[in-house]
Length: 244
Ligand code: GLP
Image 1 (spheres, rainbow, N blue to C red):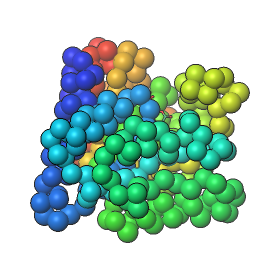
Image 2 (spheres, protein in one colour):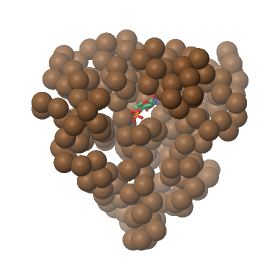
Image 3 (cartoon, protein in one colour):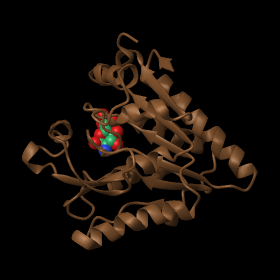
Image 4 (spheres, rainbow, N blue to C red):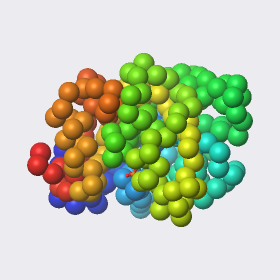
């Protein structure tokens, strides 16, 4: 789906999610959503906040799972994904705090592995993702599934690609301050979502969008796996659509 402007894209994606939340709530069901952070989904979350405030959208039945988190940042660091989602979404709507799942990255080694397992188990316990809202990295990553992440990977510790670290450098006021590792929901974990909405905004995403969706499905470009997902759809603004 293509939109002239990114605010139109955000409004449409928010409507889809809101519609599903309302429908499921009417049946007494929760809606489980995996959320990316970053500039791409920010407008969609802003729109969900507006729907909550102005149209009474009730998010009390929503369960959120962060798709990833940096490892090695001080707790409550302004760059952490946990802090980001608080500021850009959860502080402003009525999602219950106990329904917000953030990978615990405070430990290392076996502790961290156990925390990744708990993130997966919590997801299984609520019946898996109804939605995953994803952005795409310039290298084709999904969440922090960097190039060459395997299709059957689960939530785990990963090493950040230089492309990803460079893209984050300005957030950290210098490349040397960007973490080298992160926890990410795995490709298999993501691909089990019933609906995946991949959002791309801006000219700088045009090349990778084309490669991921017109090229072959390959582990070199993890987003290209979505070609094989029947519930995946692509939301682009005109600059990201490039020559599509
Ligand atoms: C980050 C996140 C991804 C996000 C991507 C693109 O590294 N882990 O979930 O989709 O980069 O970010 P942006 O939307 O700011 O371009």
